[in-house]
Structure formats: C-alpha cells, structure tokens
Image (tube, rainbow, N blue to C red):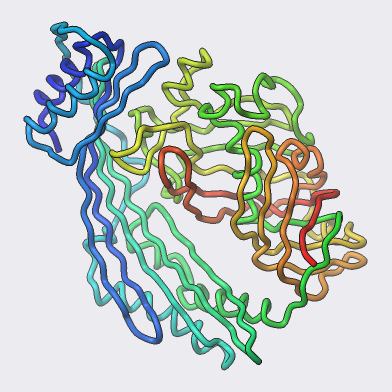
Length: 459
C-alpha cells in the first residue's frame, strides 16, 4: 500500500518536534452494495476509500492528522502537520521497521466485492421475494446485500509494521405490513466476517420470511402497558442490552478519564454470580472479529466479568497510558480519518446454569422480549433506554399475546444485579456500533436471560 522506506520517513518526521511515539495507519477499502426496492433491483453501488492517518503521542497528549493524498509529498505534509501541532523542534529521528506477517484466522473463499453480480442479485431477490410472498398484507419490502474488503497497514515508532485484510458480507431485509391504514415493520439482517460463501450457510428465504412474520406480528399487536415487571430477553441481538448498558462502560475511552460507572471496580462483584461476560475478537469469521486491531495488536479473548466479578477492561494504547494497564487488542476505528479508541468486537454473556423453559415458566406476569431493537446509553451513569422490536406478554409461565411499543429503561449497574437467570442457548446478532472513532461492526450476544425487575416503557 505504502513503501516501507516512506513509512520510516513519515514516522521520523512525525517525531521531529518532541513526540515520544508515532503511528501511521493506512487504509484501502472497497465497498459493494445492491439494493432491492418495490419488487426490483434499484441500485448497485461501488466505492473505494484510500488514505492515511498519522498520530503522535507525548505522554497522554495526542495529535492526529489524515490525508487522502498518497504521494510522498502529500504524506510528508501530513506528517509535518501532526509534528507541528505537537510542538517545536527539528530532531533527526531514524526509524527501522520490521515487517511481521499477520496470521489469517478468518479465511475467505469468495470475495463479496469481486463476486458475480448475477449471483449476488439472485441471493437478494430470493430473500426479498420470500418476504413479499409471505402474506398479502406485506405492502413493502426493501433489501440490501453488502460486502466490504478492508485492507489496512499499521506502522509505528516501536518498529511494528503489519498489514491485514478484513472481509465481511451481510444481507438486510426490511418488510412493512399494512392493514386498515396501519403500518408496522419487521427486519432481519444476518452477517459474517466471510465472503459470499456465507450465504451457503444460511436459509436465504428464511431471512425474508423472518422480516415479514415480524411485521405481521407487530401489525396485530396491542400497545404494551408501562410499569415495572419481570422481563425475559431472548438470545442473539438481545445481547445489545449488555453491549450498550455495560460494555461501553468497560471501554478505556470512558474508564481512562474517570467517566464510567465501572471506574475502580476491578475485582469487585458487580453482577449476579450467574453472569460471565466476554469480548472475543478471535472467533473465526465472526462479524466483529479481526486478526489485529487498528493499532496492530492481536485481538484476544477478554473475560470482562467472571461469575459476577469484574475482571478486565477493554484497553487501547492511549487508555493503557492513562490507566497503567496492558492493551487488550480492542483499538478500532471506522477508517483513516478517525483516531482509534477502545471498542468492543464480539461481546456476549456466556451460557449460564438455567434451563430456558424454566426461565419462562418462572414468570407469573411480565414481558418476553423476543427481539431487541436499538437504544442509547450514558456510560457515566449507565442509564439506558432500548426498544423492543418484537415482544409478548407472559402470564402464569406462558407466552401470550404480542405487544408493541415496549422499551426497557434502567441502568447498567442495576441490570447486572437484577439478571437472576441465565439460559443455555447462546447466539449472536450483528450490529454497527457508533462512537468517537466512528462506526464499526460488532457482534452482540447472550442466551435467554431473566431480569427480575425492570422498568418497561409503553402506554
């Protein structure tokens, strides 16, 4: 992507005004997408993004500059701007990089960006027509099939020089059901860190049927009543609760500056003893997995909470300097225009001791959140609010009528204590997480869990 001699020169220039560490990050990303609207392929899009970001440290201060000009002159100008922002001086720094081969833990067979258009449109059409034909009340279906081929390089003043490639594929189907002037939606959006071979591992038609079925369920549902109640949250994307309400509070981005409710709690019991929570960027071909993070560190399996005890945070280089703790392979960014920060990869609550059928049977009156939607959290206080995309009332241990408009409201520290049953059907769901370093793909997950008491928003 960039000559080694140029990289060594750039790092030397970046350090010339007194910085104690410098890093060059290069990116070449190709995106391909196909969109289906109103019964036909509506758009096929391709784009390419290339550029370099240069970061300089001095103690805990950082300066970041980026450029899309990949000529030697353009790169040197970027390095000089970072150096000038850091301080004054004209030191002559000599850097020698040692290229290191990155092991490929996530093999790809068919690159989704290069794959045949006819094959990709056939996949998308199969899913979308399955949704359209599911029921006469399905009024609209939209779908997207997307692939990304993301190449990076990382070089720094410690001599590190690594290059890596991240490839992902995903399909998204959104369906709208309509009756008597009422419209309700459903969706399904599986993805993996794989090529087009991913679509050989799933039932493509079922993706469309899932979106249509969910839309119809919500169409016939009454509004959920508000109040405090017991809630069972299903597996897969239900893990967004832990990701948002607790995971962000365990990132060094917040912990390192004292802006997290989890500051200073290592070794303390912060959750029910049935909860073990993990962030693992090494899972083969998972949506949030990478071989190395965006600072060149190998990803790893980080046990965050073990049987209720806080064991670790997710730490990038700046967080490591602030906290005096080792990096954990969690530095991520959307692209070269963003300075990296500590981020989650594949984050989930592990299987627990309870049988799933016992969890539902234990609820006298409450809510079964079959599928969660999006939400928001304040990492400092842990306060969160999440929508329930598909929900049902539970009475006397039985799942009953569907409800819509439900939301879950609480704090991360409280929900960790109030999860009192953890099932055994761990599964993950795919999302895109936004933070100060942009939007990055993350897996969330859990088995079926029970929250003894939580505020449910509704009518």
